[in-house]
Length: 213
Image 1 (tube, rainbow, N blue to C red):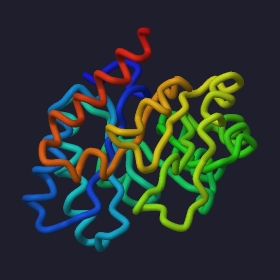
Image 2: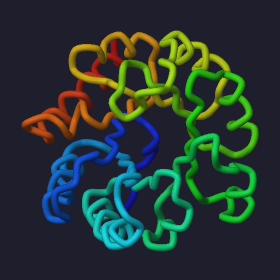
Image 3: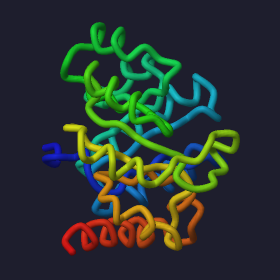
Image 4: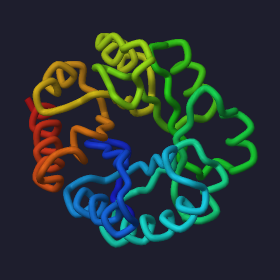
């Protein structure tokens, strides 16, 4: 049974390094075994054949640990993972995807540094929006950093969850928490750490406890 209200909390995004299917899946499993509710598969560095092979296995593990799987950008991969959602950037047509996939598909939209994009995304069927990168990021090297205050502004007028993403780690997470993001998308801050499980739960507890202050 899916955890209720999965669009909140720490939102791990799959590792950027790939050594083998076994190692890759093991890293992901270590994050899934924690207290997260949502996980994103971002396989831009992998071949289509590799992604098709990995997705069913990742979805099986997500189901086992009661975590919602979101696929980054690739609409075609939805057919290989029943019940998963989709996260898209501004190079994808949100309206067309919503029309073709129906209202049940969970769709997140990257809004980078733009409140106008977030407003448009909500109006046209997004289930959540993300802003970032919030800090220098190896994944988005050439993307302008997002002003942290935008998260707080977005929370005031949007009726869907707001996610902050990009370069988040143990040293800088507190800078974002004061703006009350619903989710924090983290890649290297989790998967480049020696103990993935304990690091993930550290972030989970930090966000939860700060929200209760």
